[in-house]
Image 1: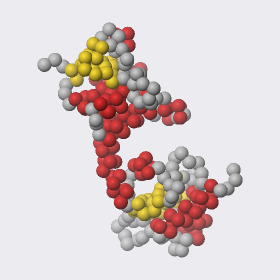
Image 2: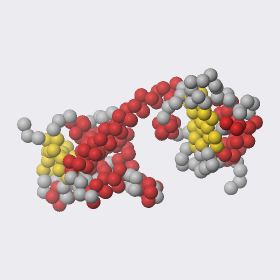
Image 3: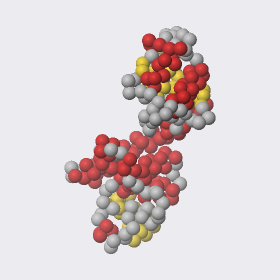
Image 4: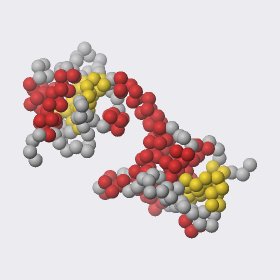
Length: 272
């Protein structure tokens, strides 16, 4: 039986991710060739990825035929009805492929997966090398995204407090911060666990400064203010305890959350 053939444009993140997802969907031996568009133009293959050129005997997955903000990787996911983890990977690829990097500075751009791939091209990595590296990366991302899906339902069951405007969300449990911020989008996340209590401000915000919340903490009965850590950059505060001791956090999480919400709302009313 002849090997299934897919051809795609010269390697970029969308092309490599589309090939990875197609392999995952087909679960069969798939030969992938990364070709210049002029060569694809006169080529025929079972599948064509991330290119409007050439003839596809079975299916073409290309985002150049639509005005939608999508990518070829997402076309593969949607066609094969792949799961939430694969869709989340495709969403990350779509962000990159649709110039989401415009919102980043040079330091952020240098850390994108697409820039890493282009660095491998300049360093003359072979197709086998860069596909192997990205397979490991994508496999790990899928594993994490699948775990995130399992964790989200547990997070929902352990929400202690959530303000109407989503300014403050308080969760009981040592759940991953990135999952909570991505799924629930609070401005301030309060985490309560056997390790203590902490507040983290979402990265998009620059104010209010949590260092200014210090006076409010001091006024809380039994708060033990000298034990709190206030990050000088104002995005984090925390109180740590030894999980193996009988020590408890010094504040009531619900009252603490309400006090934090009051602080956040009062700060937002200050004139610029």
